[in-house]
Image 1: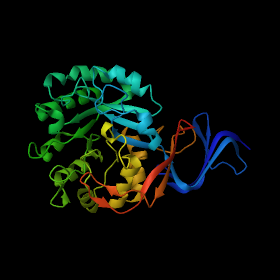
Image 2: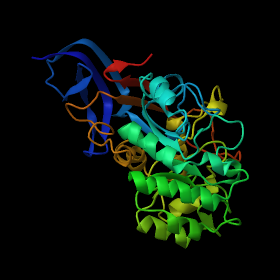
Image 3: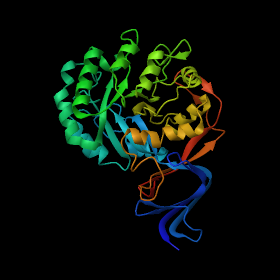
Image 4: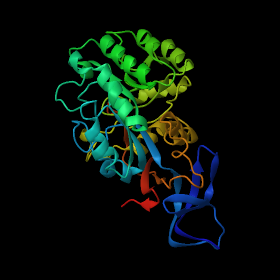
Length: 374
C-alpha cells in the first residue's frame, strides 16, 4: 500500500498522447504524477472524487496574452487562464527585446501558470498605444536575436501579425522579412497573422513560411480567412502539406462558424485550438476561455478526440514541451484539467453573433504542479 499527497478519481481520464480513455485515478506526490490507477487500497493525504468529469492533461493555449504588465493586451495568467483549465500558455508578442527581461521576471517567473513567449519583432512588444509594427525603426533584428539568445527555451519563437491593425504605416513585406531574418538566425518558428489578401495574396505570404511556422486567426470570415467560395484555398492546403501549422486564435474577430464548418467539411481542422484571450475578454459573459472555444469546435463538427489532442499533446509538441506537458505519465508534472460538459450552458456564439446549439465544457478543477487551483 502506498501513501500519496493527493488522489484524484475521475469518471473519465483521457490522455490523447497514450490513447487512454477510461475511468480511473491519478496519484500525485511532490508535484508529480506518481502513479496512474494505483491499487484500490492506496491511501493519500487528500482524495478528490469527480465521477462526472473528464480529466485531461493540463490544457495548452498556443495563442493568448499573458502579461502582468507592459502590454496593452495583457492579463494575469494565474487569474484569467489557470482557473479555467489552462496550465501552459504562449504569449503572442506581449514583449519585445526592450522589455523582455521585465516580462521574464514578472510574468514567466512570477506565475504559477507555465508561460512561454513568442517575442515580438518590435522592440517594444505591445507596450505602445500605436500598432506594434507601426515604425520600421522598432523592428530590430539584432535586438530580437540577442533577446532570444538571452531567453533560451523561454522564448519559443517570434510573433508577427501582418494585419493592417498591427502593421499600421509599415510595409508588411518588410516586417515579415525582418521577422524571418531573426527566425533564421535563431532557428525559431513564427507565430504569424496573415495580411488581408487584397493587399498581399495569401499565396505569396504562405510561400514565405517554413515547416513549423504557425498561422493563427485561421477561421476569419471570407475574404480574411482560409476559406474562399465555400472551400479551403488551394494555397492554404499546399502550405499545410509543406508543414505549416494552423491555429484557431479565436479573439474578438477570428472565429466564424460558417468558415469553420466549411473548412472542417473540407477536411481542414486546426492543428491547435487557442483563445487569443486578452484584456477585453476579462469579465465577458459568458466567459471567453479555452473550454468554451473547444466547445465551439465541437458544435461545428470537429471530433472530440481531435479537440482534446489540439489543446494538449499537439500544442505541447509545437512548443517543444512534449517531455513534460500535454500527457499523463508517471514522473511528469501533475498539471491536470477536469472538465464537465453542461448541456444547459449559455449559447455558443461566434465573433459575428452567429449561434450554434450544443452544450459547453467548463473547468471544474485545475491542478498545477500537484496543487489544486482555487
